[in-house]
Length: 400
Image 1 (spheres, rainbow, N blue to C red):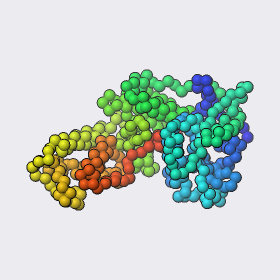
Image 2 (cartoon, one colour):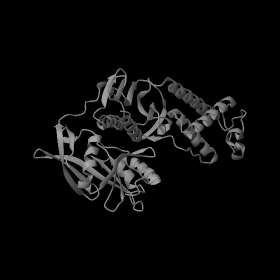
Image 3 (tube, rainbow, N blue to C red):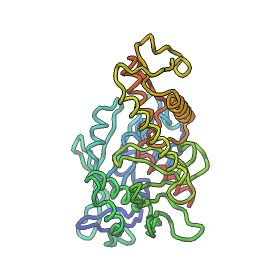
Image 4 (tube, rainbow, N blue to C red):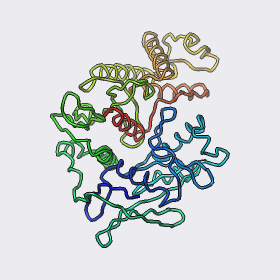
């Protein structure tokens, strides 16, 4: 069966116009090129969306994640799919769950971080690198198993193979990130490319201080992501993702803190703008944190000001540990009140700002050094940046 797809030329090479085009082709030709039978595409299980589910000739489940650009989070994605699928065990009449699951990634290249993640992971993963080769005015998809150096290929039939790169990044974005670390700039531009490559309908809409990604500029347009360029708060990322950390059925515009590497936090949801209330909360916590550290570290061993036993807050007597908190009582009260509130927010999976996490990280470090008792914050509010991007794109596709 011939499957017609759209290709585009980037530099001297060819690629699928979108990740959807790559998925369309493999959905139709997976058996021909890898000998696996597709069961379902875009299958949702326990909130996780799997690109392709298939079986090999023995009935073994094959879970396939597709990327049209290099992606750092592919191992984590497949791990979550693995867990969700084994919890539900769908298609039992076609899948033999007594056999180990085959976790497969297909991408044009693999980031060094993905190779490291795979190397030290308890599960096993197959990585296939794909390329599009042109020979005698014909196009072929070439798949290479990066471990066994085995390649296979299949002809691609196309309606319109056209030479068109993604649009150049807006000059205002390039100028804004000019002084960022090279690794941060690389991540920002990779995210932009990932979003624009996801679906041909996604447009880049630049305005004063904002760059949005969605299907147009009308009142009914749906957006997946937005960069806000703010001199005070640097580059701020917003993603349209579900409330409750991705678990709700309702979609909101979430403000994301990120180190522009892998770590991210959902700081809150705002309908427009940068989030005045979020900024206010960030400043309050930062100021309290600084005041506490200044008082605590400025006092010597012979500090004689009255102290308070911490039984009320920690259900323990610090005097048994020889620990005396060298901060005035009013500031103590504020400190422990905020600490308890933040931990409650984390426990209830509510949005947490980066400053609040710094506050908790300081408390953990100080408490462990002072008492020798370790502190565990569960569940961790930190998210994987690429996973949040994928979530936003998946939800965008559902809404359009």
